[in-house]
Image 1 (cartoon, one colour):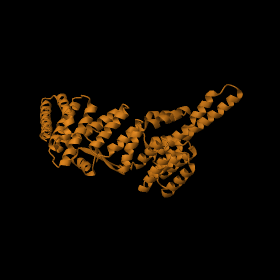
Image 2 (cartoon, rainbow, N blue to C red; image 1 turned 90 degrees about the vertical axis):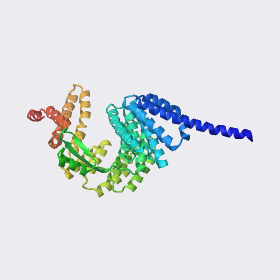
Image 3 (cartoon, rainbow, N blue to C red; image 1 turned 135 degrees about the horizontal axis):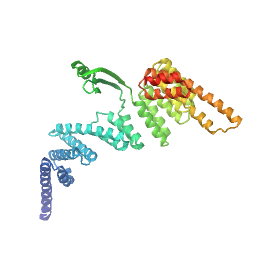
Image 4 (cartoon, rainbow, N blue to C red; image 1 turned 90 degrees about the horizontal axis):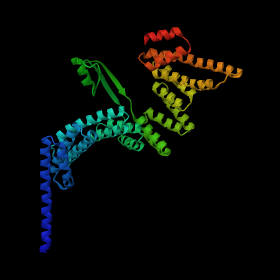
Length: 423
């Protein structure tokens, strides 16, 4: 019995020695950090990491706080910025979790401020990555930003969309699934005003903040924008990814569940219709379209979207019908004019291909003349739509250039010169 007591005593001693060592290591790391030696601090803490599980809550909190500060300092000094930002964020998150569980908030407020700082750094870095097509890196940063502040669900949505751009469909699906569980819609209102100093448009969280800035004179030209629900897009992407993976039944189930949960969201019905179109089930597609139009006969956006879906499916007759109807409902619906012109011009390629293949026989020459007239008729048919598009948005360079090319092809010199002078 005497022997076993000794063993016990020795093990008790061992634990307390480990704890003392840990306290010393945290102190040493703090000292290194104060002296600007962040890398040294990180190294010291890495040695103590394995023992931290048995430490007291107060020590754990201090450990994660020093670790977060050291890593953030490295990131700010441009040392493996991306990795260290992510690791710092994780350390602060661990710290906040420990203090939440223990009910003691010694470092949480400071950590929260650092977390906000990291969040914006991650978002800005993600935007920079996206611009140079580093979509995978961008998506990870956006997801990290979301994990830091889960109230800000928009970052989860952006991360999912960016994973789609990166063609990392499994990851995208996982995040979309999170958004679905959160019943995220993203619907809301955005407030803007022009900053007199920079001439740039600034975004405000509330109308109150924005109106105050206008009142005190720092901003002008206030503008409010309704942000539509993103549910349709979320479920559409989920459905498309599932279809891509051959999981069509799951896609249909996901979309019908979404519709039951959000019966008034027309974007979801469009998504469902699109899904049946993708899977070549034209009967169900027609039935769904009929349903949507019966409920919303004067919804210009909806009608326009039906035009897009029909055009994508190669059904030009229906696409034209829907675009014309959208213009009827809303005469200034610029995208309907642009898309209809593009749809008609799309027919030119086939004609050009055939013209280029023709020889010089009498039969071929006759066919060439027929095709030339056909091509000119296409050009003539798009002029009114392009003119209206240009009238609605003179700053749209693509519309103006296309109209110039059409005038040039039809040798309409006077019109060409007049438009060129305006540009």
